[in-house]
Length: 189
Image 1 (cartoon, one colour):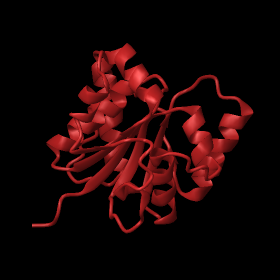
Image 2 (cartoon, helix red, strand yellow):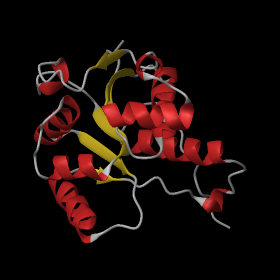
Image 3 (tube, rainbow, N blue to C red):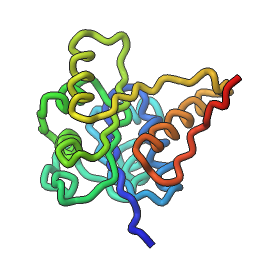
């Protein structure tokens, strides 16, 4: 039996903490080992949007790491992971990743993911985009990351916000190459 896949999940202060929470729950259901890093702004936002505190968020992961713990296993390429997702990804975090500013464990883990040529997916949350945002998205894309603004697929006729979030989460898991991801497919008209 192969060892469980490891997924690094970052949650930042952008709106959309539900994406990170649902990714953690779905990864657990798939038997994927999760390593979580939540920024202080991510905790504030998760509390505001979902009523979760740091302890509640960390309970959703197999292992939680403090953002200031730059000596954690995630800071090294020798710690093998399948992929990393930042859900949601603030423009501040995007900028730090785009410019190699590995000033905390989340941005260091993203830097390691890129240098090891592993899959990095950023669920960026901001609108409208300014030129700095667009240039930073271009930069991370050129480095090998996938920029994934969580936009609903209305052609799937979602019945609720939860269903729209779930559809995005399944697409993310599939793009990360995790076994068992089940995005809904379009079969044509």
